Amino acid sequence: MEPIIIEGTTKTPSVKFDAAQGVFELKGRSIPENSVEFYKPIIDWLDSYRDTPMDKTVVDIKLEYFNTSSSKCILDVFKKLEAIHKAKNSVEINWYYEEDDEDMLEAGEDYESIIRVPFKMIEINE
Image 1 (cartoon, rainbow, N blue to C red):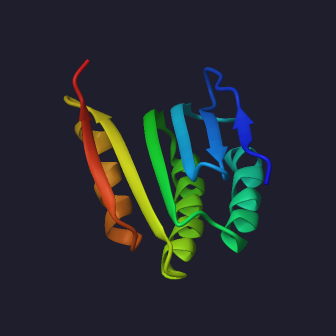
Image 2 (cartoon, rainbow, N blue to C red):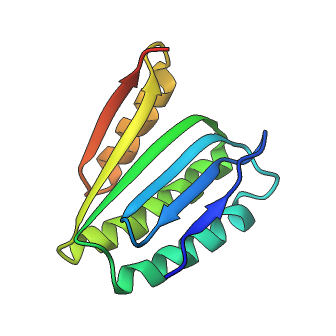
Image 3 (cartoon, rainbow, N blue to C red):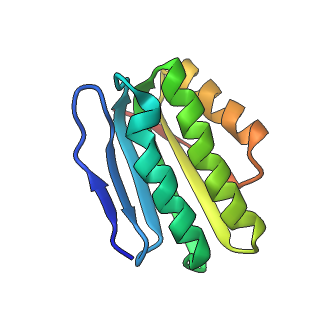
C-alpha cells in the first residue's frame, strides 16, 4: 500500500501516513478552505489500511491550530483509527501540544473522551 504524503501549507497540515511502518503524522495548521475535500483522501486511505493494518499503529498529531470544520474531519480520522483498534490491532495516538496551549490540550482530551483508543498527551517545551 502506497503511503499518503501531502506537503503542508499555511492552511493545511503536512500528512505522512506510512502503512508499511504503521506510523502516521499530521502536523501544522489545519484551516483549509474545504476541510471535507482536504481530509477525504486521508479517510479513504484509512479505509484501505483498515483491511491489512500493522500490528501496531502509532499516530502523531502535532497540530498548532485547527478550525471548527477541521475538527469534525479530524474526528472522522480518529473514528477510522478506532475501527482498526476495535478489530484487535494496537493503535496509539500521541497528541502533542505546546506547554502554554491549554486549548490544544483540551482539544486532545475532548477527542480522547469520544474515541476509544489510547491517547498519550505529550507536552512540547519550545
